[in-house]
Image 1 (cartoon, rainbow, N blue to C red):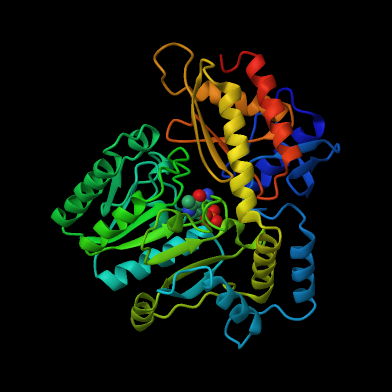
Image 2: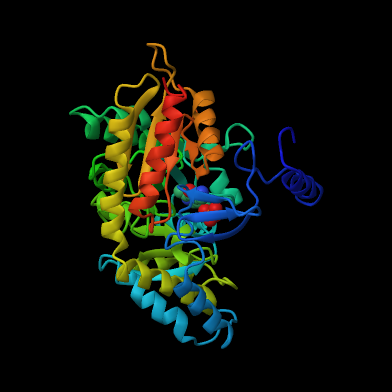
Length: 430
Ligand code: PMP
């Protein structure tokens, strides 16, 4: 609690007493958030923080349209999904309109983890196989099954024996002319490993922007080749759109569309309800029909009317405010200007982005170019002390991760760039 103000110290103590040590906090000076607006968060003292990290509040903190939709629904009814209800049907029809024709059914959940859990169970039932392939530092959630195929948990949780992992970072950070072939070869090797071990391939589960691997949008298209290979190996491609979905990447509403991939199942969560918990699994009819024959699936809160109204209001906002186009325009601007600002500064290891999802590598300042997680953390904390909120990702936590609400304005971008200029002039990057 060194250096903390009295208010934060008391809250941290209270948290420890009731929440224990399971819930990690951001920043060496955690922020006591009391309200938000657009891309801004305000603390108990009224300080205005620029939120460059929260994709949950995708159409802005305290969005009035979402609030009105939720409030209106709460005055009507909010019960579980075993009644005939308009809200779930209205939203399901609308959501499926954002997908290619073959992806024509949806089931609702309450989180990304639940969505991935259901997707994997569907894929296993449909293919009759058990093996799963993910990237080397993937994160897909917290249920027993999903955690066991999420290597980014580190060594604390045993990974599943039916898991094969594929390294993609080196190729996606420095793509040569053979990038697609190299990646494809690695996926084929993973398929062979699972076949040889007797598991077969049920699914390749890929975060479509590879956020926890270090934000790796890559050139559009290579995931499409992986989808074909997956089908050849008897498995299904599950596109995890928890990070990349809902207009985030600017050039397509979903990351798998950006990659021209024939996904069989698509999972989503985080931004879907702008903070009202809701998730979904979209799938091709035969996959869902088969699962329904094998098992009974009932989800108490999945598709509840309040969540559905929130999710509908999010789509209204994305459409009416043209946030897909905006994500592309302002994401290009920020990434371009950050790249120019940092240029050949020692410690700047490169920048990647798709729309409003930006990854910026920090390396040691010597000629080794090795990842520098300590410097990365210092930059995150220095920006925080300048009231600009970002975080880090990647296996060695040396990629600055910027993923603001989609309503991020040009004035917000100016403020971010100004803060980064200050951090650069402190000598933190060079
Ligand atoms: N998939 C990905 C790619 C994620 O980033 C996350 C959450 N960070 C999840 C799944 C799990 O989502 P949730 O926390 O809503 O369960």
